Amino acid sequence: MSKKHYIIPIFIPHRGCPHDCIFCNQKKITGQLSDITDKDAEIIIDKYLETIDYKRATVEIAFFGGSFTAIPKDEQDMFLALANKYLVEGKIHSIRLSTRPDYINIDILNNLKQYGVTIVELGIQSMDKDVLTITRRGHTAEDAVNAIKLLKQEGFIAGVQLMIGLPYDNENKAMETVKKIVELKPHIARIYPALIIKDTLMEEMYKQGLYKSLTLDEAINISKKMLICLEKSNIKVIRIGLQPTDDLKMGDNIVAGPYHPSMRQLVEAEIYKDMIIHILTSIDTDTLSQIEILCNPKDFSAVIGQKRSNYEHIKKLYRDMRVTFKEDTSIDISSIMLKSSEKTTILSKNTYYHDFVLEGIINQI
Image (cartoon, rainbow, N blue to C red; front, side):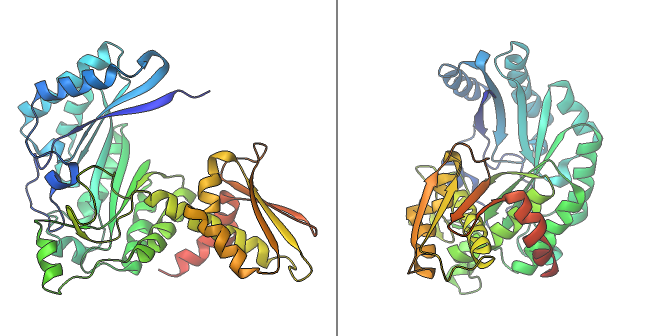
C-alpha cells in the first residue's frame, strides 16, 4: 500500500511578484491578508505535523502564492533553511515551490538544490504572446521554454500552471498552449479556469464590458480536452480549478467566472460520460432492455456524475432501457465496464485517449 501524501502549504501572497497581473489578487485567493514570517511558517508546519504520522506518510512543505525565487535571496534562504531543518530531521520528505519562468537560472537552481528543493512549479498561464501581453505577465513563452528545459536538465520535477479563459484567450489558443507544453514534457501540471477576483484589473475590464469570462460548461469542455492531451503524454495533472477556501466563494471575493469547488470531478465526469456514449454507439441498442455500467468504487462518483448527472443523461438518451450504475472492485481504476444482453465491453481511459479521442482533439488545433 502506498503511503498517504500530505502537503503543508505556506502561502506567501504577492511576495516577489514584479508585476501586477490583471487577474491576480493573491491575498484574496489565498485568504491571507498579511505577509508571512519564518516564525509564522514554523507555527504552521508544527501545527500540521501534530496531526500527521510522518513516519508512515509522505510529507511535503510547499511554498505557494507568490514568485518565490523573485523575493530577496536572504528571504528565500530564511524560508528554505526552515524547511530544510524539517527535511534533515526526517519529518518531511520533499520541498516544493512555485515561481515565475523568468526567475529561473542556474544560480537560482543551485541555491534551491542546497536546501533540498525537488519540485518547482512555474506560473506559465499561456504560451500565447497576445494573452501574456494583455494580462501583463511580464514574461514570454520563450522564458517558459527555457525554464522548463533548465529545471529538467538540473534534475528537478518540473511543474506548469496553466490558465484558460483569460482576455484574448480562446479554445484554439488554449489547445495550442497545451500542445507546446506537451512537447516540453514537464512532469506535472495544473489547469485553472480564470476567475474574476475582486480588486483586480480584470474586474474593471469585466465591469466595463471589455471582458467576458468562460461559462462553467465552456471551462469544463476546454479543461477536459487539455486534461486528455496532458495525461495521454504522461504529464500528471494534479489539480483543476482553485482550491476552495472560506474566502474564495462566488459573491464574496469571486465576482464572476466558472468557479466550482469540485471542478476536477466535473471534468472527469464528462470524460466518463463520453466513454459510456462511445461504447453505446458501437453496439446495437435497439434490442436491449437494460444496460449496466460498472466501475471501481474509487471512480464511482465521477462515473455516475455529480448529482447523478451522467445517469440522468444516459437515461434520457435511452429512455426505453433500464440503466444502472454499480461499483465493482474487480474493475481497474480509470476503466468502465458496460454489460448488456448483447455483450460486455471494458474501456480504459488510456485506450479511449489513444484510439478514439486524441487525434480528433489535436486536429482541432
